[in-house]
Image (tube, rainbow, N blue to C red; front, side, top):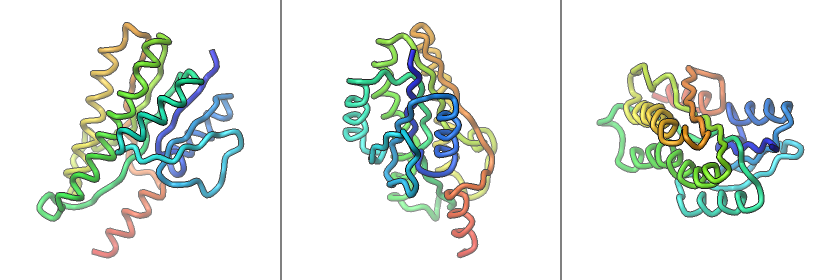
Length: 189
């Protein structure tokens, strides 16, 4: 079976590093990101999409699945927010939940039918250490990441019979553009 990996949020940081590693293991890579890549990786297909847009994401996954059997998925797209709940606007709450949590659910909803039909799938969801560890000024971000860890458990139980395995990774702080942006925001306070 040809190994085809779909990575959301793959233009920078952990997603980009994952794409580079999978290329070394002869994967065909498709990256979905709302940002355009600064440097194109050779033989990588790019699709511009905001994962919080269910219809757009579903259409892209459907189009890809119509001519390729996606075997591996890394749901990595996410945004960070550092603020206490009382200092978080409703728009910020919605933006973080829409991207981190709903974006993950929308991707799974779009890709699972194809994986069930092919009776194979390996899915990794990028949660965070904050799925398990509380941090100050991180209530919304941490809540979405804890939910993602739970999603991995439930989807695996629902689809083990279809030879689909879902895991969540829970990395701590990693020097990525998102981290650098968070540090800049802390310095402004």
